[in-house]
Image: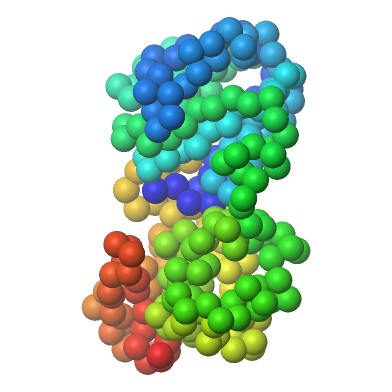
Length: 272
């Protein structure tokens, strides 16, 4: 599933090709995604200019003349810059043809993604107005996090993956950050000491920054906007490495399931 680094990589990849471009034509081949694509979206977007593209959590926000086009990649979706001569893939559901003759194409085999339209400001939109701060922003800090952790009985891993508190720390990056902070993922959130909170905030920022620089993590479906895989998987310390040697102490990495998600940790480096 594309997480924040993969979505940010996609944004950076497509932005130079689409920002400032007028939309010539919109083609919708399948309206039935996670939420139905608005039936009149092709008419709405035709002739508008894509002024900018930004990201909020794992949503891509295309600011157009009269509103906001919102795309979520879902479990298996990806956006690519194509040309008219490129073949149309089986699961290419939505595409925008631009004045510069390039095509922005959304492909999603599992159809858990979304293509939405609103005239509201992004901060007011119902899917975005409840979200926590961006993890790479100054708003995400130990000073912000410590009061929220007080008294929390859920695990620290569950907590940092909750988008109400901070967005975009998906399963892969939560595992990696907790390993680098030397915090066991089962540790109750309210029991994480202040020094460890400082460390956790720092390494979350570091892990996500490195993942973006590497183009994201390729595990199953993710591809960058140019169709090439991300390479952060080559830098993973614990995720997906059950039974392998810890890179810090050589103990064998262990795995358990929590909320149907795999958690990986080193029993020596991350004691409970």
